[in-house]
Image (cartoon, rainbow, N blue to C red; front, side, top):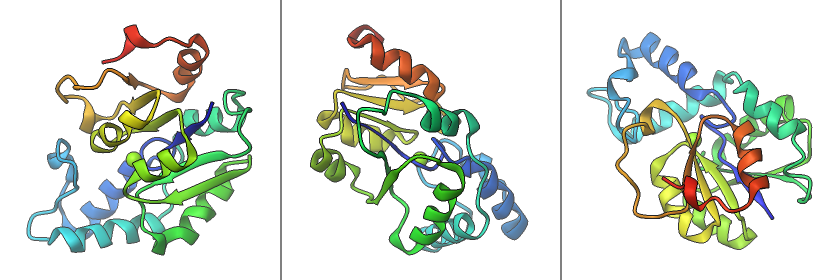
Length: 190
Ligand SMILES: [Mg+2]
């Protein structure tokens, strides 16, 4: 059994840092676009925004989501695999900053993949369970998983019922442990 985790907004508390830095620079509160997949600031091109977001993340290391980091560092659920696996859509050019962050907070062996098409890595590594906060990603990868876990965040709260039956909403990683240990999760799928 193999588990993998997204980084931003599952393990790293990225949103408050982005919100503060973007507000300081542009005077715009991104909470207004909470429901959108992409963070938008009026009059900024999406491509430039993406670059800006990655720079902010790289230069202002966000705090951890402590319950997630504790789970990853101390839970025995991942003991069957050699390394903790992270799959992030962050671009390669902020690899160093990402690894610095992980080295600061994760005290177990890990490997991290930088790949926006997350299903590629999921298939290649035969991942059974994956946790992500982005609806788009969890829907993309769920056909290749036993179960996908949608990490509850304000931007995924209002999504309609999914067409797949192997996605489960979780509120913290601690609950993941119970889910995985109990085996059949059919009745819990959303
Ligand atoms: Mg994320």
